[in-house]
Amino acid sequence: MIHKKLIYWVLGFMLFVGWSDLVWGQETPKPKVEEITDDNFKKKIAKGFVLIKFTATYQMTELDNKLLEGVNGFEGCVIYEVDHSQLKKVVKKLRIRNYPSLALFHNGSKKEVWKADMDGIVDVTNKHLKKAIQDALAGDVF
Image: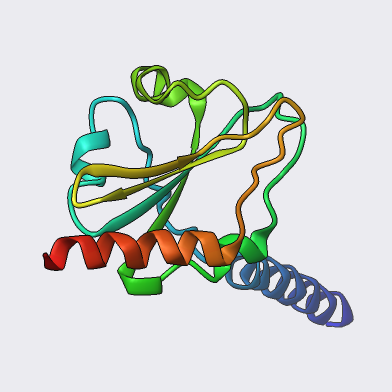
């Protein structure tokens, strides 16, 4: 009788541990990352403001996250971070050689490009980015 209770207890414990692992071990699904390539680039920049951050695995420095946080959502601006190897034609057309670099597009047309220097430093601030967006809006009025 004692062995029977012990077996039920052990099986119950194993079932609980197995069940809890299934429920508690589940991860929330990660948001789908949009991949931008040379083929779908024009479609991605076709509407509104789009700021593309070009990166490379060998870049010297990173951009400050606060720089992009202030711009994300400003006048509907969307920010994409793209590795340069995914957009070889676009990178060549924009003549980007140092990373990270930024490019601002509005309704499919290029408005401004900020290229990194040899040390990977981009001479741009949050105010510069917002002013470029406002200037593009003002240009559309006239």
